[in-house]
Length: 530
Image 1: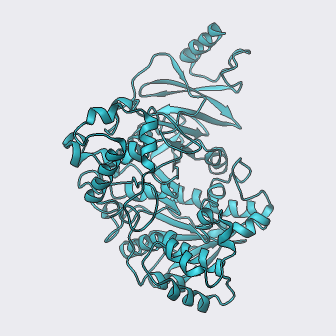
Image 2: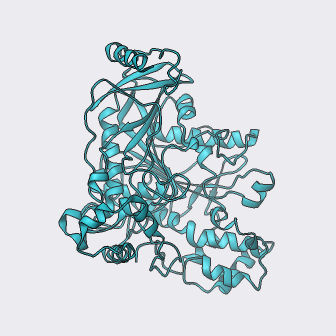
Image 3: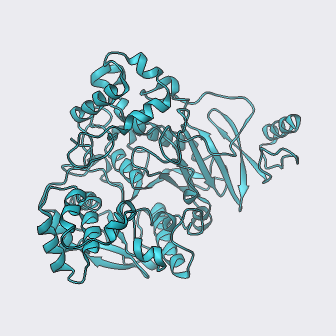
């Protein structure tokens, strides 16, 4: 068996052409193999449904020896390295944990190699806030986008939570000045790798689109204000993910002190911190965050460190370095049903119990009785539970999108807004409606993939057709108008044009304007800022 594998690698290294691995090598896929050349060595991928797929490509070295420091490039290798399986996720708690500090891997789907095709490159940045997730979820499979639009699709892993966003510069000095943003610097390193290898994988280094949902959208928003990311991407499509303000250095330093105290590490003992096991570092992150905005575990996210992130991403205005980058900013109509819809009590609220629930969950300091009065005026048919889900969405999930749209619209005429109203009509669909993450399988045209909750009805496919076609048009031309979305106008402060994806896409002016005005009475402060 070992000799069979060596023969394959030798043949691949010599020919660089597709070939079949001899039967009986269980660890290697039976699909035809293809070989690409990277800066560090040759890699073997597979052909699936006519698409070249490379999983687990290194774009950086193992970060274990560089914990809390910017990553180094990957080392060179001899022969042909297999790229058949996804690389490990970053260290994290939850279903994709515990992960591994050797996590700087990306995945590529492409119709062709080295053919001069100069295809648009779409780079998906995963969600999970800044704490969890990876680029290997089946919903992120790039095959259908490649087949549909003749594009290159890339997903990736990067450092998360304390491993990627623990601000230690004030505690351990200049060597650790970047520690609060190394997760973002990993993304920049991945984009540099993509730029360097675009032609090898049939793509155009001058046409890179970032798209991402939830935390992925927030990471993209942050990259738009990071000088080192300038020129590495050319369009941005964010889905229910905004980063208006980042953590200030004082707030980030306070959290670092709390974290070290929870670990029992002296504030002067960096060696002890670097030697602690991964699971210990993960468990300590469960301590309560000092923020008055949310009662949650300790927050880790990008830090306005004055160096890698010199300003807040979208406050007080949109970053000038990204003014020329076309941007789509989207949300789902019923975002918080994803977070709050798992509690049956939230579906049986009364007018008496609603104020207390809303006070705890709207995340802004505004009198809940006044909010409820306004919602009852706007939507007289709403039940208490419907008011609760609508108000929590408008008061915490939607606010950042509006903030970004407004400053972008004041800057240029190259920003588009969308809202997903469509949802399946089965029992779960009627209960959860257009919840946070529902748009992921739609933009990827992956409604049949494991984990999709859209169903595979003809209506679901029509919505997927409209959203994925708009994404592909945006990636190719910097404009999402095509087919069913031909009437989509850029967002303006006068009209607040928004493409509503329902049974059929339709353009609306200022949808939910009454809700927007309720919450614009109070300042917006993003989680982790203070």
